[in-house]
Amino acid sequence: MTKIEPTTTPKLQEQKFGFNQYAERLNGRAAMIGFVLALAIEYLSGQGLMSWLGLN
Image (cartoon, rainbow, N blue to C red; front, side, top):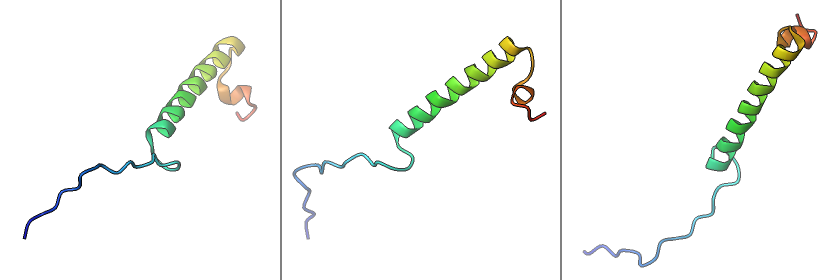
């Protein structure tokens, strides 16, 4: 019995939900922006982020 190899590769669509490359890149960029904003708030206000939010 011989194996039959497919002649073409199926074109798979990129998944829209879950862990995909686009979602991970977007999440990383949002985290970097949030971290820089937290540092800027602490530097400009002279108090920690939690104190600035009134949670401390």
